[in-house]
Length: 130
Image (cartoon, rainbow, N blue to C red):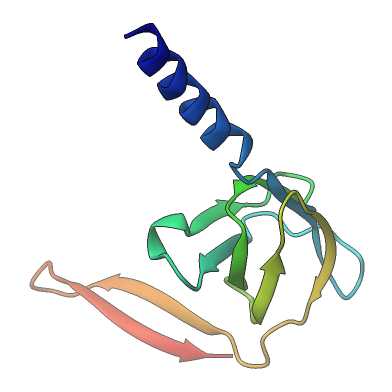
């Protein structure tokens, strides 16, 4: 019985040591070098959707995603007023750290949504193009 427990513990500890410790971090800015807050970074694992992670940049435009599993990812960076950045086949081999500095380009035509109350008290949406 003692040998069985020892084998189980070795098996569990072995699995923990094989767990990926991949990290990606960096900063997002615009063409003027200003940090972009409220930017969403998504890492979509190509083999297992459950391993997908999504975070937002902090007040300094900085982000960090850790504990990523080994494998290939699709990196998507989105901001409401900037063009989306998408990179396929972004690979994390075992115990890899990646540092990114990304610059986003502004959208050419930004849609602005205006909410108005109509006489019958229902909200009416109007789309205005810049």
